[in-house]
Image (cartoon, rainbow, N blue to C red; front, side, top):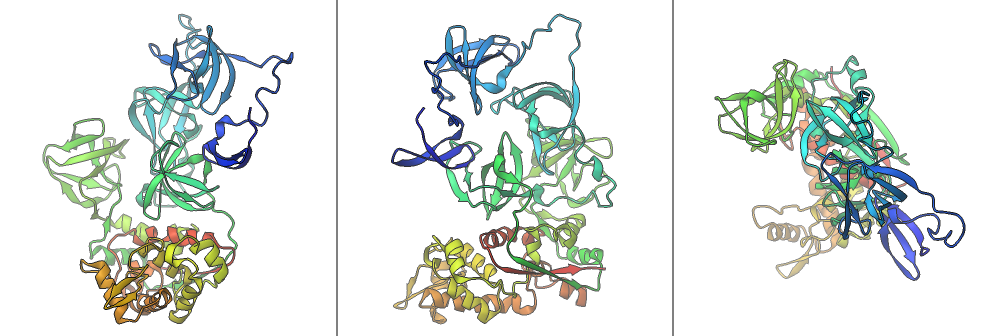
Length: 581
């Protein structure tokens, strides 16, 4: 009944002031009115009657508090009638017999689950489809709880038979297996049914099995899918994250190389409205996308994607999720079925693999999507064409930044950069003027330059960034220039000494010259051109001076750039988008 002032709610937590103290409490235990405000009046507390709905032979634990760490009061059998006083979050306050306590609300139903037992009334079922993001899977569990054993992993668009619903969970049958899934990831229609004839090449893979989403509030990035796990960092509202999977209210995401978990309640597929000015220009090339892909295939492009499939009879299972190759060597393909491309490598008998999913192939056979002990693999032409094709990214506010002209000014305000980007960034805090000067003198986009420095200095905390003694002088290095060959600190300090970088500002301005002289000075002034160098390919017919062999390199670099732009109110973006015949 204590009154608190709520400042904000993020995920399961609320920032509140209670008396003179400010801190955090579980939001599910706050209400808009005093729960005891009707005490001692003639108005009775409103209650409802529900029934325990767990699997036959199972029991529902009645606890003293709304927490799985609290003491157990009783064990309630399937079908037992309880009086429900209130439901808050995942928990319901109930009375069972003479005992009052808390149970998981998802295991309560409005009617006795066994009330029709022994009658001729058939069980009513409906057909639904798995509706998760492309590249994600829906886990089928042995019981309606995250603690339930994983029975299998269902693919997007897979048809399931739905028997009963209880809270957020539904009982379904899929692939002959009966279990429970989260109802929010089922739909009445196949999510991909309307895209079969849209003219796109449906056999092309999606990049790294991820989608981009945006935070709708300041949000904790946690080490695990639970509020009990530690916070890695707090993500600003509007931050773009790569989403690998979503399950039980949690999303596994990646941001700036960090992987963690956030609440799905605070993610959206739509980017927030931009205050900046975006200008796009088109650069035409005298070659086709297919010709450019053929040129790239000659230099062994690499990928770390898990879009790798092998026919099920090639694998002898050692568990539900692992196996070994049997009966000789087998080809791997970039899709399920013999119509898909071979990736140019085979797995020999005895090779251990991890099975990510089971799918029906276009040839009628069962195929396994696998991950095996080889981090980098030869990319297929289909995969290369996906990343080469600008049309796959130009409408995405994040991925389109691989076409950002790194030689174009963002026209930033130094005060805003200091307040919104560099605040709290160690030695880089307050250095906006130096970055803007460095960008102007060397013809580099300011956001790209700042993102580069934040990455290399660990947000302004690295040893080189904070000054290293060399030949009696303290020198600074903000971009890791020359910091190689085993002894990064000493070599980076020597380079800084040789170039007179004796102040942080000198290191920011001087280091920018090195950055501009290599790729940007050679005309490769977008991340896309740094990776693919289409100018050389179109002129000479071969691949040359490419920054990376990873086909997804440019795609992966843009999150930090987008998120820095997203912090600002005013800026300019110029995109140079390639166009092929």
